Length: 159
Image (cartoon, rainbow, N blue to C red; front, top):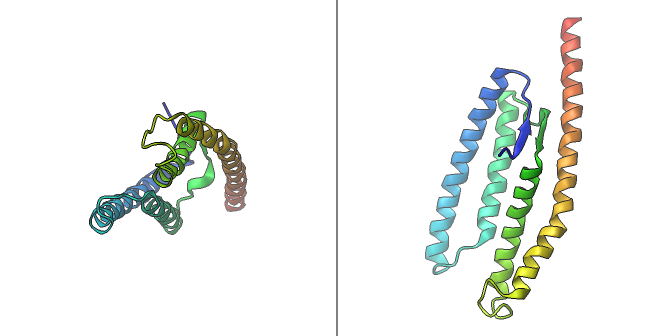
């Protein structure tokens, strides 16, 4: 099952993207470990999802910057498959629902299978699914623009 559909133009670019991805993943794992240890010691065992979301955003931005510095263009044709859109929507839903459950434990009577909580999960997922589809559409538009720009660059090199 593939979550991401990408068509890289040459093998060198694949290697550079893999290098940047490995570095960003290492940064993500180290920062998540530090935030986890900090959460356990500082907040007496409570783990906050915002810290992990924050480190994921930092790692993603680092990945984009590292790709730019290496000369690899990751967004030349990068889109999510339908499974990828569903997985990203589920990830965002889980992040929101975990925070919702922490804040509203009394309402859900400390039961993650409470009907109100399950309804909140469904509504959150259905609210964020169109947003993820729009983001995927924007990625597709950016990919077409990058491909046209790359083809223009190649035609200028030929002239």
